[in-house]
Length: 432
Image (cartoon, rainbow, N blue to C red; front, side):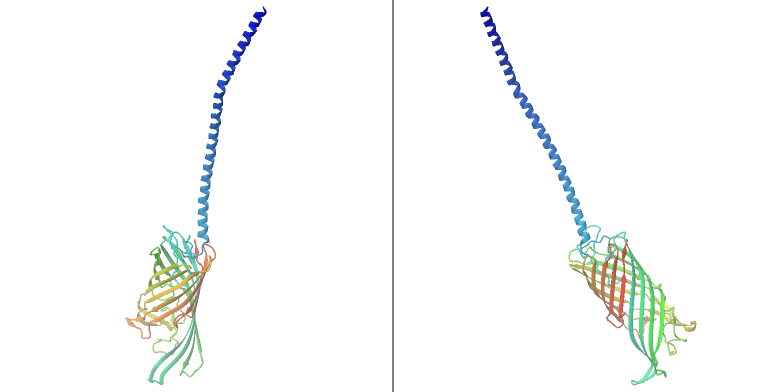
């Protein structure tokens, strides 16, 4: 009995050992599989997380690249705006014009934005064209003063020391004030049109002393005139882009009308006729405000940027058209027949230099020369007409108030006796 109990105990222990061994073996077999699965899951999670990090880095790189491009564009725009006038690009003609629309020096831009240097204007020809689709309105005011002496001999000489007739010594002081409005329109970046309407006020004071008339007193003859002047129409075209060492070349064509008061319409101070009559002064009672003749001017302007200055100049030729069957009005409503009159043509040249002082202001200096031919009457040169030389020294200053408005001041001094002693011009170009 006891023996069977021992056998059963041993059998139970053996079975338990076998069961325990099987369980241990089974546990040892499944543990590596679970570990491998967990490792695979961990690696998969790491790969997923790294993929997310790579995507985030890629997005950050794209954002940084976009910000870099934006900053680069802003920097270029800021440099273009803050660059001094000799380096800036005209955003509006300014330029043209404007801004008077405004010294610009630099390389010619590519494409349609053709750039020209701008200088403080001291001549009638502007130095920069109005950009396409832009407008420039330029009101101006000019004052001119001239004074000269004249000795008139009315009679003939028997011997060099003896004069039979009248000696008239005169001193003439002339003041001219011209207010004008000019408008420029940019058809293309190379072509612009211009119209100018002036209003002229003139006053002359003539001091005379007639000798051999029984009186040694001086007399003063005052006269004046005010009316619209001669309207002008012009077109300018940029011929090249000014690349390399070549200057910018601008061709121009200007037509002057005779809308002003005609010199042959005003009344002359003569009782009947001035010719052979010494009782009148021979001076007009009312001054004309126009030339009385049509004229057509062609010109070629050049601008050469050389840092920090701009050299400029132009060549012009003006053809004056003659008129037939002319007569002038004298006192008592009488007319004195003159015939055909053809004013002399004009050759002109000017040159100068512009210098940018800072971002807003510039200074210019230049010389202008004009040679006027003889006047012809009935196809024959007038006896008292000679070729006249006009020369002036001009100083100009330009200050840009804003991107669209500037103030230009020009002072001119006459270099010859026939040129006005002083001219002062103020222009305010405004671009739109």
